[in-house]
Image 1 (cartoon, rainbow, N blue to C red):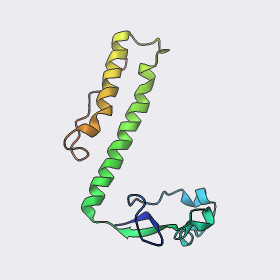
Image 2: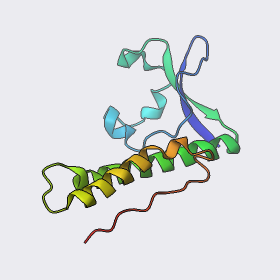
Image 3: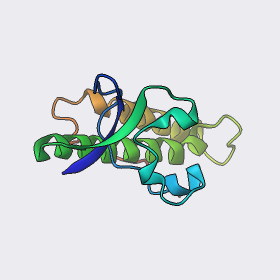
Image 4: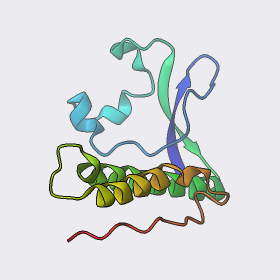
Length: 129
């Protein structure tokens, strides 16, 4: 599969992991035909840098894609649960707040699981009444 990687033009050294280009780059750069201009970013003040299309083995993509998905889910669940641990949330009891805090701690430790990101054991979300 083909992805994009930021590289030093002079040496070809990769400066980040290969990744898909964000779908909104055209809007970010505010121009049409931006793909023609990202191979040399000196016009953006980034000397000797450019984005290049690279071929990545499917096995690497699978792991990278799985990490991206799992990390996104973790962030979503952490943001979603923040309201339940907020001190000013008077709608829940101290016991319920403690359950949510434990849930958030378990979410934060998912990346430490031995088979992350391919096999994930998700913590049980506390009930909401």
